[in-house]
Amino acid sequence: MQRIFEANDILEASIVKGLLEQCGIKTALHGYYLQGSIGELPVSGLASLWVEDEDATAARRIVEDYLSGSSQADSSTGE
Image (cartoon, rainbow, N blue to C red; front, side):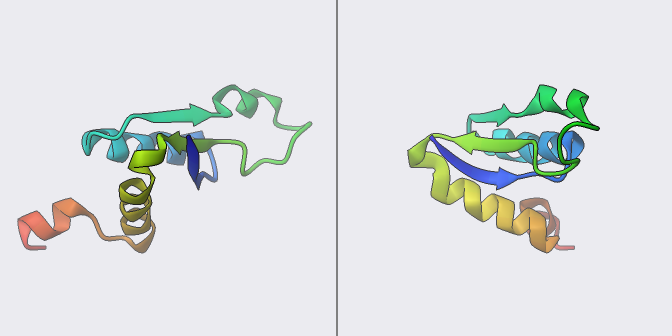
């Protein structure tokens, strides 16, 4: 497995996880329960998304699209 995204928080991690899974990429979210340790750990960088090696390239493209503000939905609706 490869780490393909480090989220700012659990909400962002969940959004990106959903995007990846909509595209058929199984995604593991690590660090979900660390959010409860806020105060003892740094606030950001606790949640990361991991995918199988063979899905890493496609997953990185999806994450790049998310970070740049574009999405597959934009291109299909003509927006």
